[in-house]
Amino acid sequence: MSRLFLILGDQLHPDPHPLLVDFDPARDRLLMIEAPVESTHAWSHKARIALFLAGMRHRAAAFRAAGQPLDYLQLGMHPHADLASALAAAIRATPTRAVVMLEAGDHRVQESLQQTCDAAGCPLLIRPDPHFLCSLDDFMAWAGEKPNLRLEFFYRWQRKRHHILMQDGQPLGGQWNFDADNRQAFGRQGPGMVPEALRFAPDAITQNVLADVEQHFPRHPGRLDRFGWPVTPAQAKAALDDFVRHRLPAFGQWQDAMWEDEAFLWHSLLSTALNLKLIHPRTVIDAVLAAHAAGRVPLPAAEGFIRQILGWREFVRGIYWRQMPHLARANQYGHDTPLPAWFWTGNTQARCLSATTRQTLEYGYAHHIQRLMVTGNFALIAGLNPAQVADWYLAVYVDAVDWVEAPNTLGMALHAWPGMTSKPYCASGAYIKRMSNYCQGCRYQPQQRTGPDACPFTTFYWDFLSRHAERFRQNPRMAMPLKNLDRLSPAEREAIRSQAAQLRRQLDTL
Image (tube, rainbow, N blue to C red; front, side, top):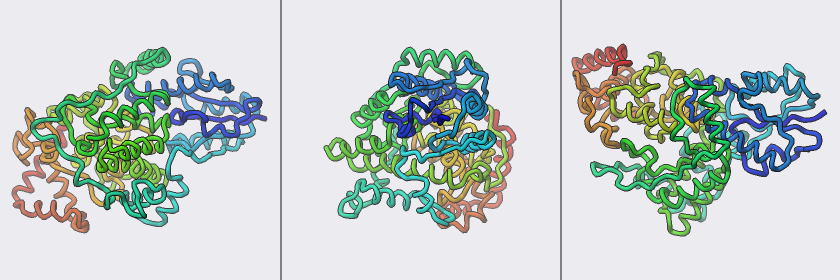
């Protein structure tokens, strides 16, 4: 009896593939599946579908070139809607003594595969994924019984145990982070000349994928004419080299700034390659460390970027597996307003929301502040249903895998689960005006709380604080916003409450 080695669409590690350390090509089988449900479970952006399929088909070509016995179930060429039914059929087709896989990136997928193997009476052997710099066992040991987990403490622990940006047991430069040097706004002058990000013209394999996506998912959101993401390990390495050489030196300073019609700015665009496992995070970190050591990248920029890879990315993965499936149902504020239709079109008069959602539909991409402080901030203070918002984030971003998207959306952006950040990331229109040019020419005025020209962010921000004021009084980090809230007269607070309620009823026409 053979073993069946299953490789999922986000497990496209370069050779030697870590799942195949004991693979016997004379007896064992290798299986990859393009399952339509993985594109419709969340109504996915065409570019997201294309990215996963293109990465999978390039990986399949590499397996075949290496002489590996691969069964590849391509979209439209097999009868199975989902991974579970395809796996069940593969187990039935040939006597199988075990299914072997790496840890999945999606609780739903892992559960369905486990149930399939249990029903077939076939053991499922789940191996740790060496892609990560903190195993799930290590994370669980670090987290222990703590009800609340904080990135800062995890990040310092990671820096020490991996000896990254450390010198004689202390952080390089004498401090753990350089937020004071990073996260600046462009000001009225704008970003100036932005280095063009490296994009990859679709080859024959990717062009066939793009055609398949248009054929099989014609009504899905988004565009494919701007597709240029890395889909092979070689392209991922080229994208890393391009970022480190051209954009990393200024990344820290401008990582939170936004500017209309500048989708990429100084960001790395490496999250797709990392999340599909085309490149290892240690490879990324080592390239950044080498550039800093050579004097080409200032310490604040190097530290700010490494914190995202070594700290935040590993942190959210641990939280995901510690909190699922509870995390998916989190809604501590009881928010239930439906997702407005313009999240899928960009047709809103609020310029920041229009620019961010249109960019998202164009590229399948928005950087972390657009996701957190524009769409996420709006969803939080407007009281949108967390599950619907999380489904939208999973659907529209090319780098979205559930392990990273659910904690970022439900834990951070929406604060639906309170154990991940010490306060909600809520802000009025003043923040967006400071960090972008979105407010220029917008019909809404960020300084106004009420009235026909009031910025919805500003109205909803003060309404959110007012609705949850008693809860927030227990949080010292909310003391200043509440102090400002208390300065408002009862009449002003009632006017804000009334306008917010009216806006909430008419969100589709915002």
